[in-house]
Image (tube, rainbow over all chains, first blue to last red; front, side, top):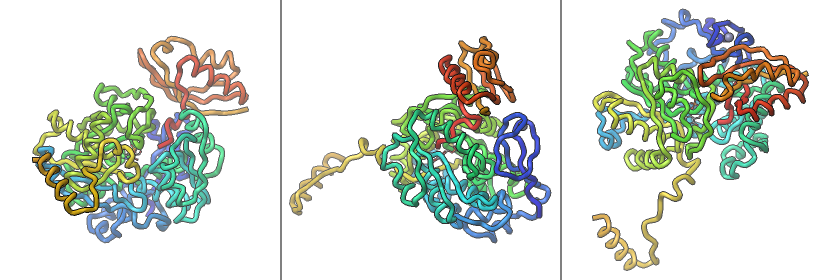
Length: 414
Length: 79
Ligand SMILES: Cc1ncc(COP(=O)(O)O)c(C=O)c1O
Ligand SMILES: [Zn+2]
């Protein structure tokens, strides 16, 4: 079955053959994978999906892969939990957490995009993959490259703390620390991607890579019994994830997997780096780049490639957006941990905090169903909590000391 | 000769200046605009630059001095 037509410019609509390229030669617009939905309709059904493996690959027909899965066989199909405790705390009737803090193998939703990108890179015949990243993306590219026996180059700014790269270095990629400002490192990566015949996952493979995020959306719908929730709150950096979840929902409507794409998409960003939410709040289709200043490092993209498309997804769906301060982000992380036993990273704190604000403001009505997207694991960057958390009591190794301490603690909390 | 695809973002105070014209004239760079959105107080332009490597570097440094943001066409790629 020919499900893939190739690539298509998102701006001028020009078609291109399937290739490792990402920019329209005519208008410099971004390219996107073009499917033949006519060929997919009737072939992709609820039953055909249910018969697939418990991973993102159950949706392989809707991903831009022609051959066999090369890496990341166990990525995705993470828990969608009914979050009763958090719902009670937030005063909302029907609340779910889509929990990618436990996504295999590197504990963030990036495994979805990277396993698709690396599989596609192998299909294209590349022997080397690369990315520029300070965190989740680097972890995932290094891990999947190792699994696929590909060489990998990971670019990072030279001033990144050593602790941040252990989770990448362990897979033994070639780590290139680049001296210079963020802008200089950024430009260098774009030039490297242009010059070397490598699969730079979020540059020349980006059209394929980005499609992996659709699986986050398919899973939400399938795990809800092929229902669309009234609201989904998504953390945004480059703006790709929210755009692709919305695309997934619309595809499910086209393919008859759900009745109607009736979900409002809400964007969550840090106040210290929220250009997409600013567009939404000011109702402007022009993205104004910002200089990031937030503890939510995994969302610190000041000039997001898909900012405009994220804005459009939100508007088209009738959703909204919310900014969160650093203090609110920490409270969001603590709230999720305390109520549901889930330790998420700052991006999750942003999403929980933004959801709370949207509920309090009445933007999300309390009686409607809400899905919160938790996309990364807190154990990677526990340092943000050091100042906020402390040991309750330190004692001598004597039962009497403990008795006294316990009595004191109880008197404090009662 | 070097070739580059960049995205320029203009601050309000530079919107009315012939920046792209000067880039061509003073630095001997051939500019080729592919897509743009320029509003009254803000704007961006996606364009191709062609010229000698050192002229491109000097031209980009001059743009930055003017407060024009110069990014690769992909924008921020470090996540
Ligand atoms: C944990 C986490 N959540 C959300 C995002 C946002 O995704 P996107 O860049 O597609 O908007 C990122 C990274 O970019 C991330 O690392
Ligand atoms: Zn185009």
